[in-house]
Length: 373
Image 1 (cartoon, rainbow, N blue to C red):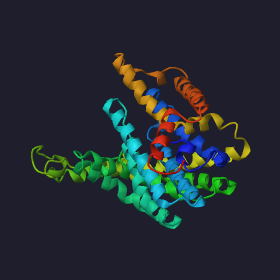
Image 2 (image 1 turned 90 degrees about the vertical axis):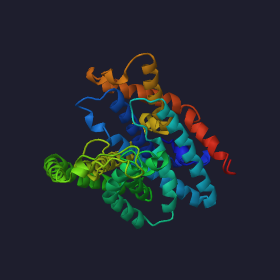
Image 3 (image 1 turned 180 degrees about the vertical axis):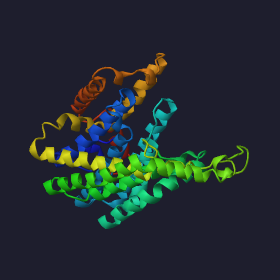
Image 4 (image 1 turned 45 degrees about the vertical axis):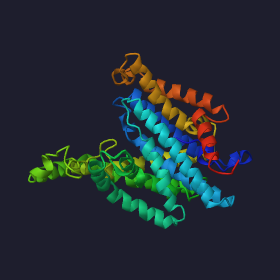
């Protein structure tokens, strides 16, 4: 949801050649996948559900590290960088709440995304090894903690954005922090790209097999075990009781499910493995021919604008009396390809501008909080 200038607000125009077209293209693929998921999902492209957001969060973590590196190279004061990130978080948060106000049929992740920009500030000075370790720990402890937060913070919007379920900052933090570690690497190196692909397959294949053949039985056994505890399986929460007696019990069984956007360790690892493969392929293609990636990178550069547009489209259709969830574009032959083509064209048109509409606004908003012109 950031363009490469947006992800590098301290980068002057003359240094735009340093942009990573492979990263933009991967982000663009994630945005296209979101549109397919929301408007043209079918059995063939069902793999995009949830995975597009994981790919996007991985790219965002990479971008975050690149911003920190550019800040260091230009000897920008850390306080200025923090001010920019805080300003960006506020802007994205406000956009997110406007989209939530539209009450559309899709989940809005911008508030959680904004929280990640703030929480990541404590990690920018950590070593790459520390980031890898932190990511591994979050893959394990993040899912149960975010489920606990889903119960305890259900009525507190800010806390819910931080740790209130699979669409919270904690739900996406393992992938984002993994992206921060990846952002420390040389993404223009062929060997690095091959390592991404190899690591992606090493993660994807075993965890996909476990999710397909082992998890269903484990989940059923766990649910059977939970039945022994009626207070957990049949909670009688009193909405008028004091906190936390007024909260529902966390859905612990989802820890053993790999469904889209359930936030389980297995779902996140499967999506991360697939995302690493895509990122590695984009890096390899960029080494051979950038022309192939240009349309996708154009979408990635105006990702925040295009992300927001899909909610406005859904809201407009509902105002017109059309339920967007009943419009089965995916059932039309090549309907998903048509949606992807439309987004590619829209991305190219928007990228022809100096910046996308929201990308321009966020840059101006950031400048209100720093002295960098």
